[in-house]
Amino acid sequence: MSDFDSRDWSLTRSSDPLQLSHKVAILSRRRLRTGRRLSIAHVGSAGQRSRRHAFRDRPSNAKIDMARTFTLRFLLAGREDLICEVREAESNRLKSILAKDDAGYGFFWFDALDGRSYVLNLRHLQGIRYLWDVVPGPPDARVAEDYSLDIALVGKELLSDLPSEDPKDTYTLFWELEIGGAKTVTFLDGDGEPFTLVVQQIVYLSAPKEIVDEGRRQVQEEDGH
Image 1 (tube, helix red, strand yellow):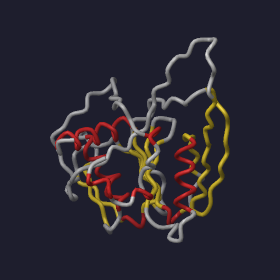
Image 2: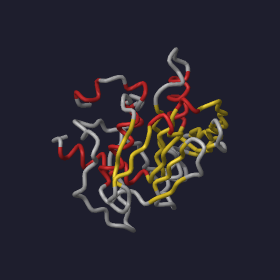
Image 3: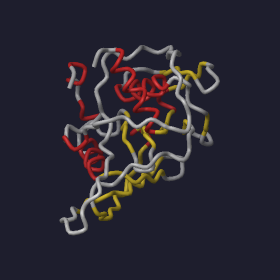
Image 4: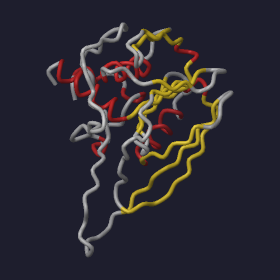
């Protein structure tokens, strides 16, 4: 892990080695082009925080390990509940964050098994239900069927737009919200036009995990990691 990752990862990713990713999956149905930048501060040296998603075939006579998946039902102020299926480690990480004295502040960035990444504003979280099931072996993350960048704002219908053509823009947007401190964030939408959001008015954002992971990979490559 780089020096950048020495900051408090309690609001970011677990240090569980099962969560270290070995390879970034890139969408095959659309070519991601690079070249555009966010107008907000550029990432220095980003930590690798993607999830292991390989599910290896096992011989029929091999011992089958069982793993638990959780369906998290987020009760959000003024919005319909957000329901996401996640790995057990993500559920445990959220429980750890909410058990702290400063719970209810900042953003929770997590990956769901539907192939999308989410960053959720804990200020708008009213409660959460942890529903779990048992599956054989580590669950696979699916490729997101919806290619959109979804933006949930206070008192607004869900906004859906194409993400920026540069995946670094989407990754940096998630990163800026997670580390906190900014009153606004500005990014480029799918048409290459600036879009500014007031941070406190964001309930959550969601984007395809493959785009976020590809943006992370490109940032790390630029920084020599």
